[in-house]
Length: 112
Figure 1 (cartoon, rainbow, N blue to C red):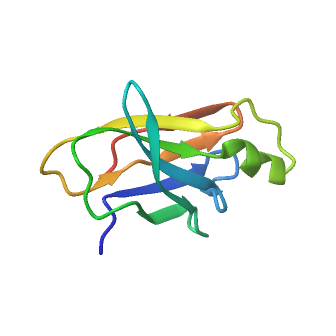
Figure 2 (figure 1 turned 90 degrees about the vertical axis):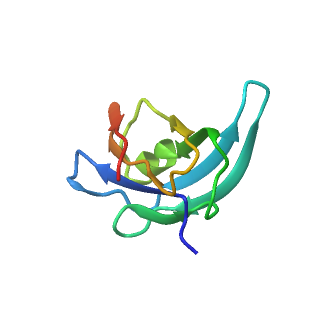
């Protein structure tokens, strides 16, 4: 089975993969949010299996527990979590949602 969603988190301050960040995948609508999966980044800062093999078209959310990650390292941060919403299109079999992280900023892009 191949996961429909994967992620990679890089710590921009240390220049290293962000190991040990809890990550969750959610299906969201205007009325609710349903947690579909949870995982933790590996030694390479990756989650290679986040959620099911297929997702129905719609809006999804990936959340990263960044506050706990920085607290474990004794680093002050502005963001207790990072939330990235994205849209799944019909017929697309994989989404890679990366995060470049620092204590006071983050960025993302549509990965491949």
